[in-house]
Length: 348
Image 1 (cartoon, one colour):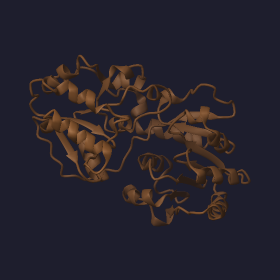
Image 2 (cartoon, helix red, strand yellow):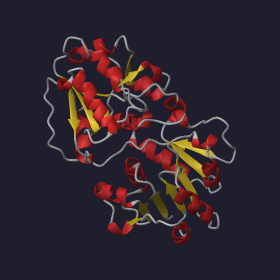
Image 3 (cartoon, one colour):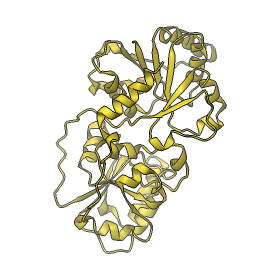
Image 4 (cartoon, one colour):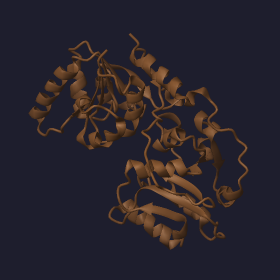
């Protein structure tokens, strides 16, 4: 069976490696079609160069349709297509409309189930894509789902083995916050306010795994807020883009992963944070606001806080007697996720 994984956007590369491993890195019938800004990130996947093709952005209305026609002709020869980002793209919309004239079976990874409820473009995409993967079990039953659409979860929580010389002092506690610096998504002020004016917590390091400098508004604001509160000694930051090796090395060494999300119902009902999957990948306990305690995966694998308890918990991390058993479910095994994924894409 010929299968193509397709990423038209410039993001979500982190979801590809698991799928490649599930289908088989040595499978000659597996091909990847990728945006150039994603293609260079998969060098460590172990794929033959003949298996990887770049989808180059095209400008101009007629040129876009001509390119989509050519691409549809190529992809129409496969048995299965899996779109790694199955929303929010005019090229995707055009392509799947054209693929309606081919017998190829199309699936997609949906990163926000709200698209199924409110997006006209998603309705057009769903004329061809009838089966969607979502990235957590709690997202498999969106409201008002059409009977023609099937939903199944899978967890893209596997990554290449990166070699790193990163060393972590044994007496330090690392609290890692993965992801881009974004005040709309992350509640940095809540964290800083819990530390401000309190006795210093020895050996606590809060590692912000996202490029942080003063050349963009959120970066400038965060640096100013840290400095204003005189909390610089807690934070480890990076001024430049963080490569995969450095990024994963810090999560592998983390004591806790902290999503630090703003209190947003969308994470309860429609999407996940990439920080969840980073914690799942390395089986790290999460430090999470109690607002999210209703999510089963977080309930089982988090320590919860609120505004009144956050400082005391951070102060106790060095001596924290964690008796909770994390990651005990069968779902965290590679074989479980592989079988779950393949059953869905191979279903007739």
